[in-house]
Picture 1 (cartoon, rainbow, N blue to C red):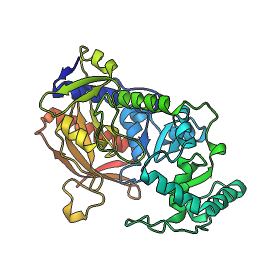
Picture 2 (picture 1 turned 90 degrees about the horizontal axis):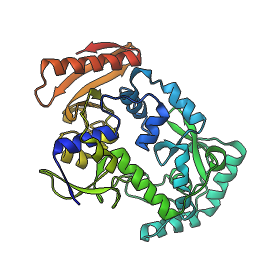
Picture 3 (picture 1 turned 30 degrees about the horizontal axis):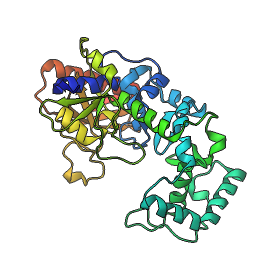
Picture 4 (picture 1 turned 135 degrees about the vertical axis):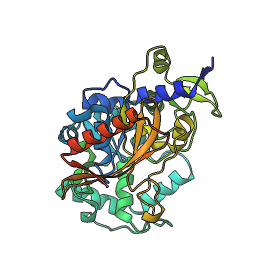
Length: 365
C-alpha cells in the first residue's frame, strides 16, 4: 500500500516527530532520545545550536547546565559531531570494530592510518598518561601527512584523532572553550552491549525515521548522520512533490488526531530544517545559513532563526545576543508569507521569551 499524503499532512508528521507541536515535552533526556541526535555547533551568535534545539522543545524550563550534567554523567555522549543518548553506543560498537567498512575511500583511509601507526600509538600513550587533552597538545609524529584540497590539508593530528574516534579508540571527554578534549574511549563511553552490524544499522534507520517522521529512502547525505532511511516504515507519495517517501507508521496513525501547533524559533541547524532539500519539498521554505557569506551578500542575517508557526515555516528572525551590553539585538523579522497581526504578536512573544531565557533585554534596530 502506498499512502497518499497532502503537503499539510507531511508537514504535520514532520513537526510532531520533532516534538515541535503544542504538546511540549518536559524531560531533556526524553527529547534527546526522541530526536536521536543533536548537532554540536558552538556558534553562539544567539546561543549554541544544541541549547537552541532543547530550548525550542522544552521552553524556559531548559537550562544549559542540565545538558552539561547529562554529558558529564555520560547519559549523553558526543560522537561524530552529534550528541547522542549514551545507550545508543550499542548501535555503533560493531561499526567501530569493523572500521573502515567497504569501498575504495575506506581502503585509502585504512592505508593512511597504517602508515601513521606510530603517531596513533603515540597519541594513545599521551592520552593514557595525561588525558583529556585538546588536539594541539597531542604529538604529531605522522610519517605521511594528510593531503586534501580543502582546509584539512596537513591537519594530521585532527584527522587522525577523528578516525580514531570512528574506530572506537578515543572519545570526546568535554570542551575547553571551543576545543574538544579527547581521552581514551574506555574512560568516556559507558559500558554496554554491541548489536551486530546489520541489526544496529536497521535500528538506526528505524529510529531516524521515527525522529524525522517522513524521509526519503535515499537522498543526499551529510557527514556523521545520514538523512536517508532505506526501506524502513511505509511508502508514501506527497501531493505535488516528486518521488516516493518513507513514513513512520506511528505518525500515520496520528493523522486522524487534531493538530495543535505553536510558534517556535528554531536553530538554523535544527533537524526540521537541516536537510535543505527535504525542507523545500515539505515546507517550500527559502532558507540558507549565511554565516559563511560576506555580510553584503546576506539576505536574512548571520545566524537567522527560522520561524515555525503551526505546520508552516513562515519567516526568519535576525537576532544577535550581545552579552556585554545585556541585550538580544533584533535587526529584522523577515515575514515570508504576510503574517497577520496575531501571528506577528506570537513571534514577538517568542522573541521576548528567548531574550528572557538568555537573561537579555530585547533591543530592536
